[in-house]
Image (cartoon, rainbow, N blue to C red; front, side, top):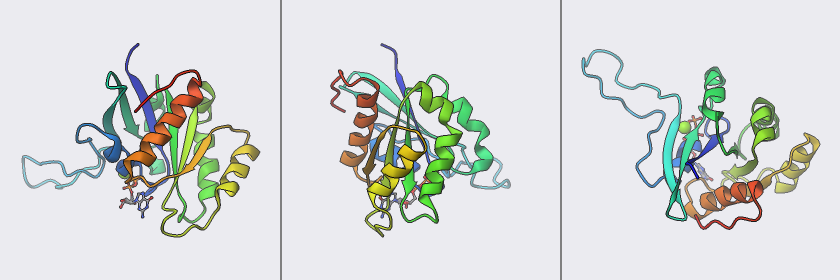
Length: 180
Ligand SMILES: Nc1nc2c(ncn2[C@@H]2O[C@H](COP(=O)(O)OP(=O)(O)OP(=O)(O)O)[C@@H](O)[C@H]2O)c(=O)[nH]1
Ligand SMILES: [Mg+2]
């Protein structure tokens, strides 16, 4: 079997870069990373329009982890990133202005991809303010006509994130047991 590819999406600050950093075996290539500028007189920081890391599945298969840039003006990247992907992990910031609306927006933006693959949703920052209950997210997800697992996660926590990846893989093939 070839390598797998999972896409992380979600609004600005929802934890995509953190999640990929937490999961990645190798130091990830991240957005907002300082790029060395040889000439020294151009801007010293550049935005890489995605995050990238890898993790191994069962110590064998490699999963490529891509973070779709949160800002909408990078949405042209989303199609490119999803090509041949295995599924989507949507991260939503529970302390955001309107996380349910964010959910609707990202489900709509990635609907073709989700229809072809699978989705698992992680609600981050619930340790800061548990504003919305998981029920509210489940109800919204159903109302929008989607199925998928939803978990409270801390993007900084390896177990939380690996559980979310496993939930996505399980949705794709309930017969398979992975140990990530
Ligand atoms: N308290 C808390 N902080 C979190 C959690 N998840 C992520 N963070 C923090 O939230 C901040 C934003 O996370 P990022 O990973 O940069 O978010 P992002 O989705 O990559 O944001 P953009 O790249 O701007 O779209 C970081 O400082 C993380 O450490 C969480 O569950 N709880
Ligand atoms: Mg980021």
